[in-house]
Image (cartoon, rainbow, N blue to C red; front, top):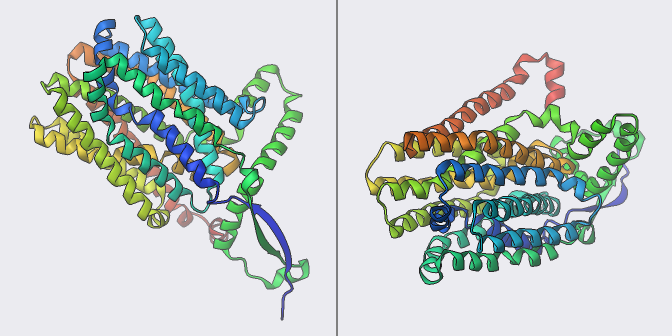
Amino acid sequence: MSVKKMKKYALVAPDGGWGYMICVGVILNVISISSFLNCFGVIYKELFIQLKMSSASVTLFNAVVCLGVAVSGLMTNVLLKYLSFRKLGIITALIYNIGMFGTAFTQSKLHFYVFQGVLQSIGQGILTNLTFTVLNNYFVIKRLFAVSLVQTVAASFGLLTPSLVKWAIEVYGFRGCILLITGVCMHTIFAMALMQPVEWHMKKVEIFEYPEESKSFLVKDTKFATIMEDVNASVNSNNKSELVSIKDGEKLAEQSKLKNFVHQIVDVSLFRTYFLSNSCIGVGLCLFSEMTFIIMAPQALYSMGWDENEVAWALSLNALGDLVTRTLLIFMSSLMVKLGSHQIYICGLVVALGARLGMLWSDNRIVITAFMTILGFPRCTIIVLMPVVVGESVPLEKFSSAIGMLYMFLGLFNLIMGPVVGAVRDLTDSYAIAFYILSSFIAIVIICWTIELFYKKTKHKRLPKKDCIQSRS
């Protein structure tokens, strides 16, 4: 029996085209935000001495930064109701660069906290949210490839930053170095100008619909249905968000002012499925551990008697390991889709835990340098796979809210546990104990996430046959 098909057309994400210009903008933003992070201790070493900042002060600063990133990232959705995407991005880029420029002339802890801690963190939170959201909207089928590509190119620049920073400090001093970094960061303004609305570049794709009387003769293809759901989600993300905002507006009119304010900032629908999951809390805790480790690692090497050349070499090898891993992700993206980003993320955490313990248990400089190189792999998985893990855990239209929630947890972790780790280091005068504490956080996430994945994998065995078939379909 022949089945008649009715032709219809739909607009889908470009997965290319202007999306590659979006990749250029994302690369510029990632370079400006994260490429100099591994040199943080080297850049601000002399400034911390001048300002008499202890380890507790540094970790408190880190907490202020992450809290600013968390709050600004969470408020991005609210701000987008009043400003267009590009207008908000350009304003945020200006704030970010004012913070970086002001840091070069700071003479007190208060000024440092205001410029580097508050202004830059606000800019970083909103820029990060906007950057990954627009990349997520432009790429659906090739999302993992696009994320790997932009992160790899950014990491290539990061491979040069230790030597570049060392040269700039020797020639211009640390304040001149900060001004040069400001010049690099000003490219974020151009990057945000490239972020055109995805509606301008949608592709027209032909789709087929079957008449009602013919549907009983068709067998549903699960894989095709999944692809079409992703395509429809990319097409209707903006329309759905508008419909959700209208429905929410009707409900919020009946609720209290406090609930109205909370609903505007936080997407309540994510509380049950995402808020308390490892994709949110676990990733946030791992990011906290990794960021704190990166900041403290150069200071720990200096305390062991390493000179600037040795520290710069170790950081360069760490960036090399990161770059090699990101390059492999580009060519292995199809394989990674089959394995699952969550499983690969856990593998990266296991390597991070083993490499950190190996580095702590050795006094040999060659061995420590080797483990620093190996740590580039988990650093890549923790940072690069973050948007992919979140993207696979929530619907497309909820991505921006989910990223905001993740950064909220990151800020809370840094605000509460950051000063504690710094205080323990100051009281014990040992970086090793601080690193053991940071490694224990990763161990906790590995255990909890492994249990979660095992539970989900065996869940169908505990269901009746009918429910099992429905859950798989």
